[in-house]
Length: 162
Image (tube, rainbow, N blue to C red):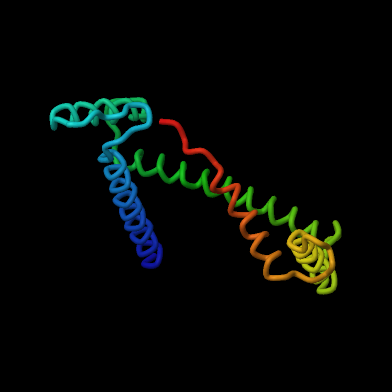
């Protein structure tokens, strides 16, 4: 019985810590002076800023009623976090399964030789991309040209419009 009480106390303390952490993040996010939908004009008056914050907080109230207690709040936040992590874990599992099947040639087991073969093919492809004259040797000039070609598309991307 003592252990059950200790566990319940521990869970309650963890919920409190999680609530404080989440509440701090929410307050921090609400204090940011820029909003994508509502750009704040400078110079900024304190009264205008506080009015905008109150409007934004009021529009983000998603609890369906005017008052909510800690238990309801924490349960809603915890449920949302659980859903997020469940989705993340299922996506990660699917990606890992796809990668595993690719490496193991759609078998249920991945042998050392299959793994080495798959990695060798990937590295051979990378080498062939860099070896421009296809002689099996990468010179310093080829390597520099390859690096410049990789950097060029990044520099050519236009700046986003405001």
